[in-house]
Amino acid sequence: MKHYILWPKDVPRNVYLFRRMDSSSRRLVLKDRYKDLACQTCGKIDERLALERGLEDDVIFRFKTDLFCSFELLYILSQRAKGVLDSFPGVSVRYFPIPSCQEHFVVLPERVYEPGKGRYTKDVCPSSTVTVFHRRV
Image 1 (tube, rainbow, N blue to C red):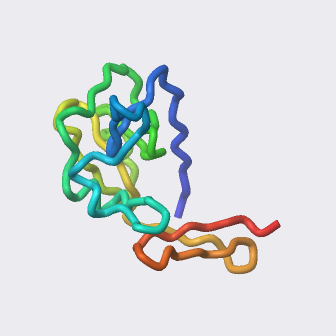
Image 2 (spheres, rainbow, N blue to C red):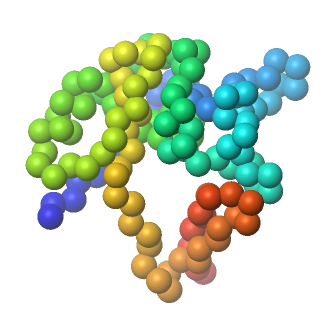
């Protein structure tokens, strides 16, 4: 099996998929649609569950690049890049549409590999499904 690396371009403005800027506190907060997914201890959310709920119409950007990252470090692909990715045999990814930008998709791999034992420690937040890996020093 061949492995490929997608490397996104930097973009001039952040694209927030699950958060919005609160005008009164001037802080990033989770959108109401995803608040029940937040861990009570650490505040993280399971991005896959959030994407399965769908994105809101306020996710707006005007970039012409084919691949870039959201603020949450999720890859966003253009329709053209999706076509290229789909042309590789054995690619196992899932696309999530962005309603306000129909030419772009959030892409997540179907297969996720955990790091090898011994090099990383694994923390699972007790009140959520979020798993965090820390490099051992």
